[in-house]
Length: 387
Ligand SMILES: C[S@@+](CC[C@H](N)C(=O)[O-])C[C@H]1O[C@@H](n2cnc3c(N)ncnc32)[C@H](O)[C@@H]1O
Image (tube, rainbow, N blue to C red; front, side, top):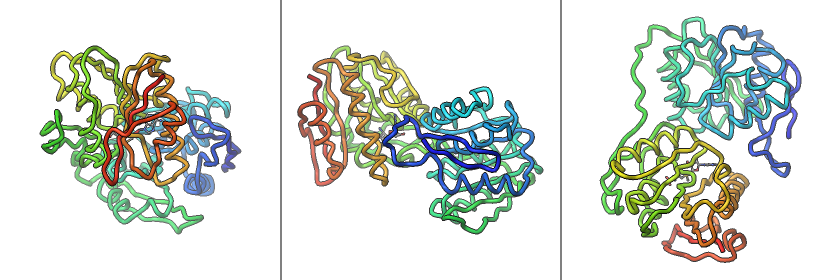
């Protein structure tokens, strides 16, 4: 848990799920920079204040906890279930409560009018593009638009997006490797529809999915092409028959679960992801391709947290990996532990991963063994059976 000092008082924040051993803070210098700027510049925080892309709730909670923005005027828009849960927990912890903020996902309809738009620049330029397109109709000539991000996250292309969709844009000096973006809305800019979601036909030679169409909302994993690890996994999926419950864990655009459904029409497939846009993409991919008979559920959530013990026959996963090793290991490890709990005895977890990630060591320790089902110089597909 970390304490952040803001111009209006301190707030206590934590990532979600909370882990006392987690060395990573729930905010960074870009959150601090924007909050300090808002406090020192006396920016009027009235009307509807929309906070977009807040990572772990630092911006939203700081504005809500001390009544800086009145309840019902503050809206948070995020694509991340984990970020939303962190915000919810921090609102309660800091005495603000759920009613202080309207929590919307990136797929919800945005507010009709926005008077202050605060943007924590996301890692994905596509997600920023989509969010600005969705919010542009709500922005008016008097809307205050301010963005923030770490220097490495703000590129010329980022500023060009603001210029093209909202209006003239400039940046601040860098402070502690963070930078602010100031944008003046230009109501005369032509409103053109955003390019997302992107739908494309999958290549040939990937089994049941060959030539089929996949839907990708902005910002999801590998939104513009089939990931090479996913492709390798598709060629190594188990052939199964009969009624069973399958989970596509961290489903992204849903290609893995859709392949499982097409391969075994009696299976019931649960698609799970912490990204709202991923789950919406998976649902579209599934519905376009499994047109008769199949049964599927689409769940936005944290891994298998809501799945009862011993209720699943097969878990298929291409777990998340990020450049930050601590994050990589923590999420994949949690997913493997979750899978073991949710599988019935005899149930199987199939995982694809880069060789260097060493998933086999983790799975061996957790399941008492694991088998290599396919491998090439870059990837391995591993199978672990719950005993
Ligand atoms: C490497 S991508 C794989 C996506 C897709 N299955 C594929 O192969 O193209 C990992 C996915 O895990 C999701 N993810 C990350 N953390 C998660 C969590 N705690 N619970 C559920 N999904 C999560 C990410 O949003 C991402 O879509």
